[in-house]
Image (cartoon, rainbow, N blue to C red; front, side, top):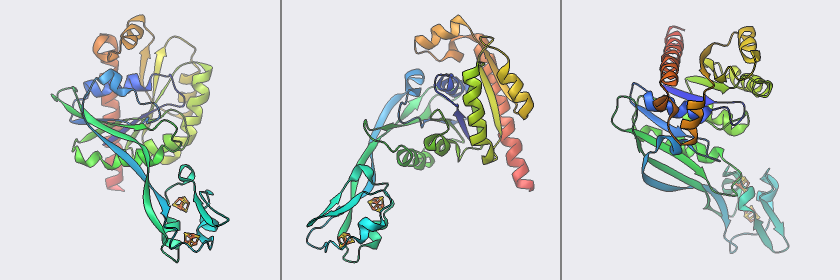
Length: 294
Ligand code: SF4
Ligand code: SF4
């Protein structure tokens, strides 16, 4: 089963919840950081990192000896990554989305596949629940690179190598293309929020964006008791189950600031996360049973 931990905005405690779940998970699990623009799950899980590969995206490279400067490729590219200027075909690799269309289209076969660096895929292992070590995988976007979904897809493509039954994904915050990309293959979505008007605003957007995917979806209210009851009221009105409320506590904040897994450091949080884990597993299993009977 794939479980995506997401949030409508940054700073709600999404990575804290992911790290806590990964550290207590009672089945073989792979922890994946798909928040590739700012990966920080490793800061809490402290994995032993053993592998790093460069992730590339295919971009065209022109063979000037074959190119007749007909301009068909430039007219085709919706992203304006190609342009005929005088006696040269200019290619702007940073604007290319890697669709490969121009390579197929060129009648002279003057375009060849080249590579643009997207970032790195880092792998390793960490100490989880009952298993001695569990796989860890992280995408890290190159500084200045604008497109994270192609890197995220390459990270996800590596998952079968690790063979764990369950996968926990730390998703990018928000509801943009990368966030949807992270949760779209999940069997269950956990939305982490906080009980404040700002938290509710972005939580509402996340519900609107992710609920149409038709996956089991539940809320985690972090720092409960700090704000008001607006998120709980919204969840009741929208029939969104609240799978966990993590109380605001100084002990949790101190553990976080020291880079510790909060559920390992604070017994009360540990109990809450274990209950959350059971609810997530039950929701995903029930959905899978329903799909089998449909
Ligand atoms: S389609 Fe081929 S020949 Fe025409 S401009 Fe592009 S690369 Fe050159
Ligand atoms: S691969 Fe696609 S996006 Fe990139 S330059 Fe060619 S047509 Fe444009």
